[in-house]
Length: 154
Image (cartoon, rainbow, N blue to C red; front, side, top):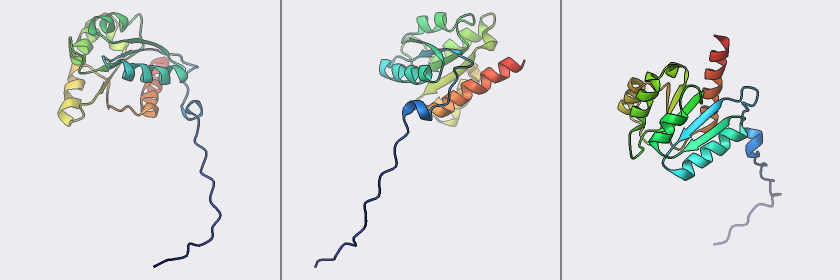
């Protein structure tokens, strides 16, 4: 059996937005952001997207570097993987909160663990937000932007 196809002009596909055009920008604020993840590819991609958005980004892949780099005098925001090999991101968050000025650093958990219990544990450890991988970059940028605006308003 053969069915004739209607003669229709092919529609032009919509043009895809360029990554830079679709990302909100933080360049006026230029927050200092630490991205700590033992998966170097994940850390690199998140760091690159945050840099495009106007953040000053440093990246590390181990816990000792994360604790040192996220010190309140060096970072406004720390995006921390929870499942790092040497120490959990929860413990890193607790250590950072214990430092003088540690309450001012915005801590964002970025993890593959997304159950309600995981969110509660992150909050108890001192995280301000809990995001599940793969990260939704617009939401991450919105979190950082909101925190920076709140900080500026104080």
